[in-house]
Length: 325
Image (cartoon, rainbow, N blue to C red; front, top):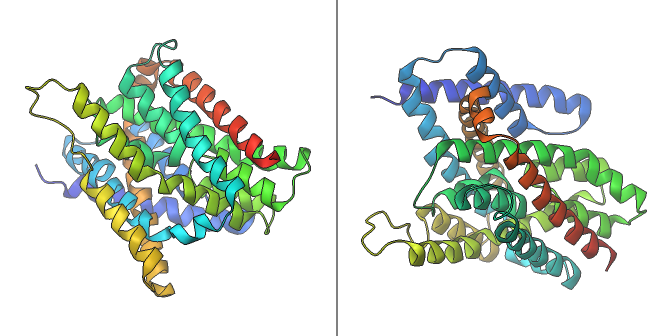
């Protein structure tokens, strides 16, 4: 079956989300295209009966297209910029990711989630939202679509809450730009959400928060390699569906990080790639949203949201400790 109808629908959803985001950002100063896209997709999925011929294209948009967006994310990351943050920010970045995954392994046993579902949510909270969820799904041999969809929904909702909570906590603690940037960049899930929260906190906070977030994203590659190695060891020796040691799109991510770090990249190219990545993510989030029906959420129950809340709290605490060091 052709993918064209579903891809056209995802492209239309992305177009509407991006236009709405451009209009709203002029009023609010906050860019939330990912959140708008997934909410729009949820509205369509719950109130419109989509033809069967849209499913292959929507599945492609929420799979390979999302992974291509993750790979392109690498061109926005310079290892040098992350290292220039200093030891306090670097410790916070490593601490957030390590503590987030440690909490994931510890609490998943007590909260009624499958190992795979908890890993998806834990990765989204610890590293970089939907991009990390997509990456982890790529190394799990046993995947359930509804777990992937609910994990993304959890991260989008909790991260959006942090857009308001992060700057509020920073102001209440009377933190300066460096501490506030470390806290917001360390505790907020999606890159776009960090930009929004950092913008609210102040012009001096935003670049620090964004760079801390980039540092977390940079850890996506080694974390995926470790998880993939663990999954391969856990798999039955007769299993023919072993995950790759390093998924192809993660290799692309690594290559682009190295290109950005060690080669001169024209600003116009960075802008073009950033725009393309925004469209890819918006299309993917819309496609994911169409699958987040009331039935899907009811099937998942409240446990994913409670689990995401616990892991988010761990990430917030570690980020706060980094801010006050």
